[in-house]
Image: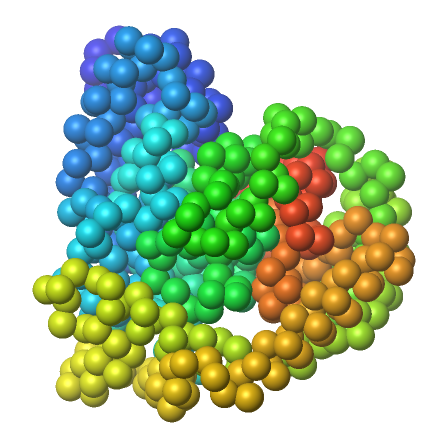
Length: 483
């Protein structure tokens, strides 16, 4: 077989290939990590001019892949991620030639001094950091009417399935993986920013328990709600990445709690009977007036699948809390304090040292940066930045009580539920305020071709069970299809 035919055969195979598929090919010497990087770079060059999903590629990716191929030949693979190209959201630091800007032109020339902890864990596992993905600027906390997927640095991310909302704020990560521009990507979430774009782009998105993954080296929005997580085409791929990036980090004290996941046998989560005997709650008050009749009908069909797979569905659950009850006061106060702390510790050459500097930069470059205004940045700047205000403390206590103790813990415990299931990413702000995990799985498409997903949400540290349920559902419906 000549080189051109071999290249086409491998490239055709690459579409929708899983991490396990790639490992099998590499173990048999059918392909190399270098091959994978080359092929993904070709896909990015072909598709990204339309999608705006990838901001930049890693100039060292090919050399890193070559080194990993040599290491594999000598010692074998480090993990399931050895040689696998992965994209990173633009608010996550990489200590290389890639920028870290949160989509803002004010940080367009910012280089991090070292890897974020999550990036270092990926590198330690043998992953190839392929590049940085575009995102909704400042994790969608710049303006209250900013279009999902827009950033002043990267422009508008497009949904590869058509003229649909791409979701946010991990928009580029979702669009890129859905389009097969990488094996997987890392997104971040404060409230819906992994789950929403995953659902909108026909992907699996895992939003973990706050404390399972270090946030050190990630541009912050809210230290009580921020987390990172994998965005993949399959549940199994999400599991492979998640199991490598969890763990304690002294730079992020709450990660001490990740010990709850220390002894999990992750491979056992890939269980086709994962929904048998599980009690699943449906909270219609959260979404019944928020989705179309078409999506409501699709959701009913998926509830029937849950029953078919052995789950007991408890319908009409009331949480005692609405998403609107939580508000944005916690985020408004924490953003200034957290961002000022982050910017003050960036490289001395970075002229942007505070939220005030960001706002001033935008005011000085309005045509490039203020298409949607910056009302949320300005509201946050009006706070003290010290987190001493009574309004902040009361909002934080209220949110933790309503979301954590009432909406989730009490409802799950009183009804002896294992998890809730929502259409798309509905209910995400409750799990966000409580710091609890969720996983979104592809569930179908509307008649117009827009992706539709369902989200499993549960107690803190219930990731193994949620992954197991999501896997059983995924394998039954097999709903994902490439754009």
